[in-house]
Length: 523
Image (cartoon, rainbow, N blue to C red; front, side, top):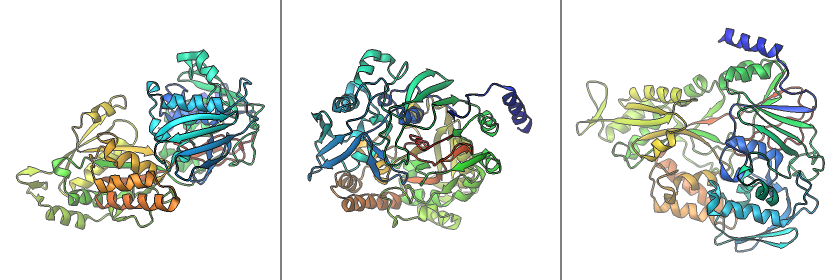
């Protein structure tokens, strides 16, 4: 590894710079996006670019909870929670020079809501009834039922307001050959699997109050450079040819912290959980005592230290304690490492230890099948868990799949456990998506069909005040933890690595994007 890194350093030292220093901000990424049409993808790589080349009606503050004005300078909500009225800025222009009006908001939202678009994030728009322009700079968003997290969801990149004329002109090439946004930077070009280039939007003055600098941006140009190889990303940052990256492998962070030219920044909360999910409808996992025992048999701190290299927090809850609507009374027993209690629970559930050190019930072994990704941390995590569970007599069989087919394999339902990580924005965001029975078979892969859970989720989703919403989602957290439906493993660290020449760096986190709009960043 050392020789390989040394060779990369030498090559980079002799190579042309990735971009001119000073007025160009170079952001290093590991993968490219499928395209840059935010309505038709869930790709975080798409979002990272759109947050800087476009704007949403509302913005998210650095606490990852508070919604602030953006293209909408203010808004009101009707007493019944069914109508949101947004008052828009009247001095905004797209990069093309076209003036932004309510018509663009209506066009954008109707495009998301149109089933023909097949927008994967359509559910984030709530039970929408209609979107209307009631004035040149006023939009009324009406729903058939209250949706307590509408504003939070409208901070995500799928709600980036686009120029309807640009979409009509480019057709299927929208998001490939161009994107006309209102953001602090203007989309210039995309070379797939190589780089995206954007230039400063000189007219930009309407940045959200999250930033001291409301615009224009302080860099003249942004280049997102795709570097798939992990060691090459490290070498690029260490040699000074990269300014920022949010995709640095965990194993390099300890040495990065010792480098004089680099610094690591973290967001307010690590809203990204790596977990194992139980298909509770499978025979060997139907007993909550078994599911609880499997939780107790894993030493999460060892996983954080050995696999994440300390870049994460051992998880005892499904929701991060700093997330919106986290219930501090949520049971944390699932995160306890207690082999003796795990064995006691399995004994009580009728799973007796055999002479071969495997557990049996009715003559059948406690064998479980786990599906996971063949890349990333998944194989190492699965092998470690396999070892932990073997100590209590559980035979875990691993089937790891390439990312291109893993979800089709999961759709076949022929497994007991799966491993995955996911970003979320709040307790309600995660819980409603994964635990409501209406989302069976996916993403509610537990097949958890519980009227009490559904009722509490519905109360939280339709709540008209914070207290009711928080109480409802707290009830759900109590239910799903008591039933041990997941194995929460690690709240994954989300490090933003920056060259120290970049001033005013601060890590954000909207759906994995740590840079957000970058308005305060300065050379």
